[in-house]
Length: 497
Image (cartoon, rainbow, N blue to C red; front, side, top):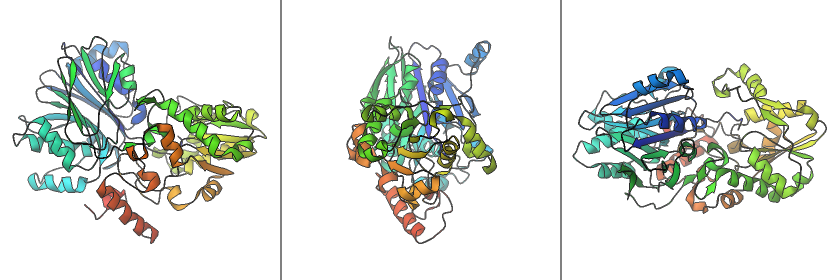
């Protein structure tokens, strides 16, 4: 995707039951998920005490001569790691540093290390609750609130299961959590709707247990995929295996549908399918839904990399040639959202190499995962026009986004979403395409293979799986339609707490 959308976060955790070092496994588990968070990363290991490393930007390469110094810096047989993009709190450098995960919270008696992927909807309520107890509370990010809530419960002589259950019942939002106790016990849990992915696996000899946001974190370590955590489930590691406990019944599963269109790597496994298989089916659906515009095209091109699998499916269903005439410059890694406006166009332009001779005079069908704000899609289409494309038909796998996300994607106001203000024909005119053809919601659901009520589709339907998010969305939508100016992320400025 080239539409300036921030990813969410990713976690990885591991425990070596024979007391070997887990740093290498956590490091590679995070490297495999670098696509989920570019702003900061961190690792905490445990060998009787906590050892912490945090930094901004991507998880770096560790050169062979430096490896021993990393092992010395982060010793331990159990540990957790995180890669982050902020969807709450500040985005200035100091705020990013302060909010880098994992966090250590609590007292010596109830000390925890914790990392998560998600976003809390009722964080105002939680902050007020903690400030009553600790007026000096400095809020850096949502994971701190989860950690403080756990510590508060544990300090009242509740066990870990009871404390996690209280979090599940009292915190609204998306949270896939990994953590360490002061005794080195590794735990993980997922919110009662299961909005964010979190899976578990073992080394082939079952001496190492691991927890990862995506299966690729297991694959890169040579671990076997074991299971996906259920919504409302807590897991612990013990004697080379996982102990699973369903703490809160799942009344409605709501896995984020955007994982399949954009966030997850194509070789990750979500549910019973690999993501690339789902994306290929998206392409087949688009061929069925928009046959007239396929017939008006001479060639398919894809915007790498999330558009590639879609293009294959579209090609297979339509017979139209897929021309690999758009390639990504792999090492042009600047993120458009951190650049000055006058720099964005050039950076996005440089990221894509378009082979103009393959497109000149042709009507092109372009596969893309989504259109959020529309600004960078405009740049891509302008480049295709410059290269001589006669017509540009956009085929978008994710349905038109009409509402904000409350659960960990940084699209948090109505005004920034081009789809909340314009129908497809107007969007096509704004971004310079001849047509914009969104996959239908039913087609998306059918391709994923889950029921519609097992997915979070709030951003495309306006129907959210949690009650406070729904109230906030309805309130802010009404104000937006009346012309009120939005002043920030809905869940950070709403009067509803």
